Length: 233
Image (cartoon, rainbow, N blue to C red; front, side, top):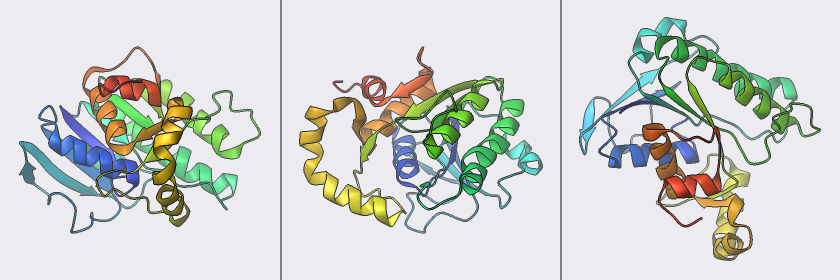
């Protein structure tokens, strides 16, 4: 399986990259971003880790991917993990990153790879009606709906609280604090609300399985991700 990865510097993107490099089914992974990965990333461009060819594509304008369409051709899956917190953002600014960036990339990818599986990291509580009062949920819902209309196989991945594992960490300070506190509560919360709790490794394993084999469920929750990863629900 040849895969694209957007948002590799975020917490979920880091976990997905780690699992892709560890899974023998992933023969090639291309990270798309506006700047190179940190030098401490697991591999350098063009190198191979456990049989997986790893590369990076730097692209500055995330509103227009037509100029790199050729580089985005010939892939089986795309992990779209790019996203930001809506805290303190206007709806217009949040829409630009969440909706405009996603659709700009997805439309080119769908045109070049009509059989591709596109995994969009959304969130628990997303509003598919696009009419609710919560801004981020409306925008995420609009994004999911637009992706479902494109000529590829789209999946909306909706995790709830994600517990970081193996050194992956969020770039958002507030989230880092929440995860730091949450690690002590995770075992308890996992028992109380298993449907919204998942760790980053299980999440990434479920996403790789979804990318490889698909699922009848187009909206994929934490419970379904655990099932895909072979974990108890």
